[in-house]
Length: 298
Image (tube, rainbow, N blue to C red; front, side, top):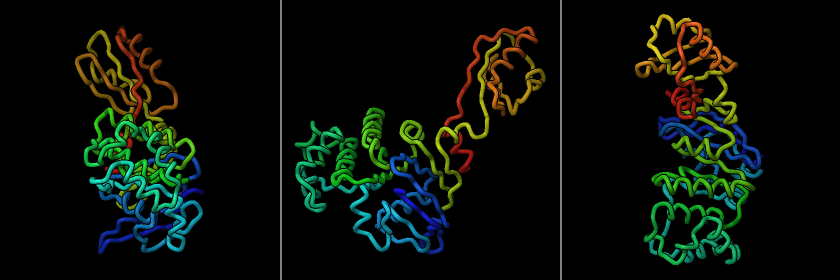
């Protein structure tokens, strides 16, 4: 396993940030680690990167114990913390050269990570002159400098505009092809675009740990948007089989929620036919990760 966490607990005074959590991440997985603010995400990432120690439990990264083999863990991990610490007065190449000396890696690696993260056009500038998106790329380039097996990224897309989001997403997906990636974010679209698996933490405890596709389809709930050509009473709508709830969204448009493994659009179509109605539109609306996240953590 790339990451193994067993009954990890951590408290700050009377506040329990992590409460006996356990999970493992296989080599090559891209895992989204989600939760509300204060749920314990950053605390766990700091434990896994040896910045702080857990109160109880054990964790290994790339097979190395985070308490007894800290140097080996640090060499195995590329870490981008939530607040990306950069020396703003240094030039991009100067900053990376400084860290290359720290990691004792060849200077040729600097050009490799600059190309990998799309920094070539900005690499001659001081970090303080860069936009937020390019500063994130510098942090990511630095995390990749020693070619780690595992990337731990804490809110890597915070504060980026839509174009920068897409760029950083593509960088992460690209480097994730041959590395294990464990990332935290509040942007659910990023998780859906990047991750294979989702772990959701709430109040210091893991509440969900599933493959992304299984999580979205777990409860067999489907939402169908339908528009009829005539108005219809709620009493009639309520008779549709397997209907969990319904909402009249506008005039003759309805949002129907079903619990069924079967695609219920054919049932809605038959219902319309039986009641002398025509369907002007009939769409299956997927339940997205954001809606599932709200349900699980509310």
